[in-house]
Image (cartoon, rainbow, N blue to C red; front, side):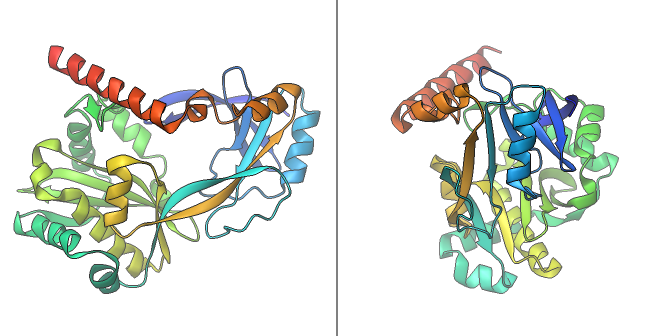
Length: 306
């Protein structure tokens, strides 16, 4: 078993990650005090045989402290005896666009969807052309800060955006939001087998009065219904305004079992003291929220200085 390097987009930032092949699947190895091994494409693949992976890691020439994996939706009932915690994801059940519009969202959200059309926004399936990439690049470079966090895509040029976002086009649908011919928002949804997965959804801040993201979600629902996807997933449930937007868009919170298997004394100790998810996740929610507020204030100050 040999470790090899692979460049992945982590929070939009190209990062060189150590990887290994086990039973024909690629697993990543986290950096830091703890070496945590996880399936690279866990949203798109199931771990074929956890017992074989655990055995291979114990026999590997490198030290892995913890192996983590989960059961992909819709497999929500724990099937393994390993220690597990529940992960909250956002799931929208798809029947028809009309059912979503009439039954799964409220009157206020329906009005937001209509608002985009009244404002002159055109939503349509798009192609990954040079014009589309130029529009993406403009959106990325509109602001260095989004949702109170440093925006990792900020500062990328046309060629970087084209290279990074062309890798997974074989499984993606592109949706564009246009105003007077200008791309002012876009969404990428990926075929993950039993469901569609929202990969990117972003719009220009200067056009925030046009309810662009609401209109993009509406088109995503319509596309999923046409393509026969029974579910649309918007990654993890999250907190604050992010989770509120998902709830208003008809998404529901669903819990999936995530397993943690300690492989060394470090791994066992980390799990015993609650550090198997990392220091940030071990902090109380109240502390994390205060740290987020401080980060937002700092970034807003730095942005004004620039």
